[in-house]
Image 1 (cartoon, rainbow, N blue to C red):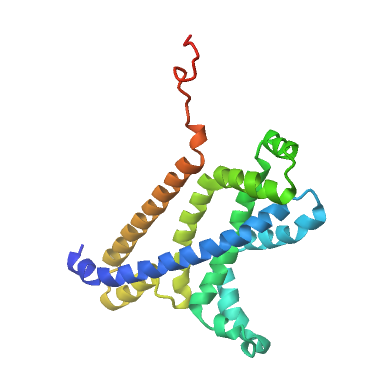
Image 2: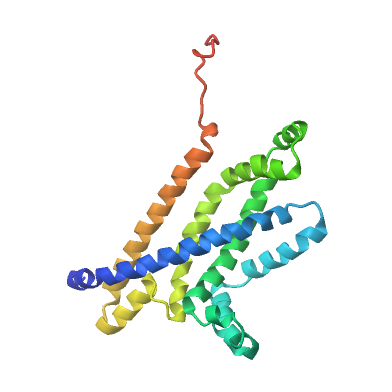
Length: 239
């Protein structure tokens, strides 16, 4: 193991890691914004409302992320109408193509997570909201979405970690993310063990931060599950 190579090129690897975090953060935020309304539509009792989000989710869950990246980056450029449109300003850039692919992919997976969480909300809570006279919009904002987010949070944390690792595919369209930077440096130095070991260690650190952040959020949103009332303060005699 040549530690000098790792020390020399570690700053460049950190630059690639910063781009990786940007890809994950931007696509994750936009993906959630798309996933929530799709999850609400998927949870609708009407099959006509569910059909369009189902087709979207089925396509992006059923095809590999790499193919989706290639279709957006290489496929869009094959159409002259796209090249002559205002969309070409975005689609000609590999960064934005990666953002679009990651966003649509994670939105599909996240929508199914939130849909399952919405349907897992106890009916008694929804009936209580109806008893208070809440309309659909108020009930969704005050009851459905907060409860669904708390239920889906552990699974969504896993989705973010998977997205972090899948972001390595961005290097296939010339982006210098962490994996792309490691591949470029390795091609010059012929030290694959050192470079990819260092890159793997950085991925581990980033995944650890993400896991810790979601663990903190779980404790905040689901703290009622860990709350144990003090029977002495409640005036209840211990058995």
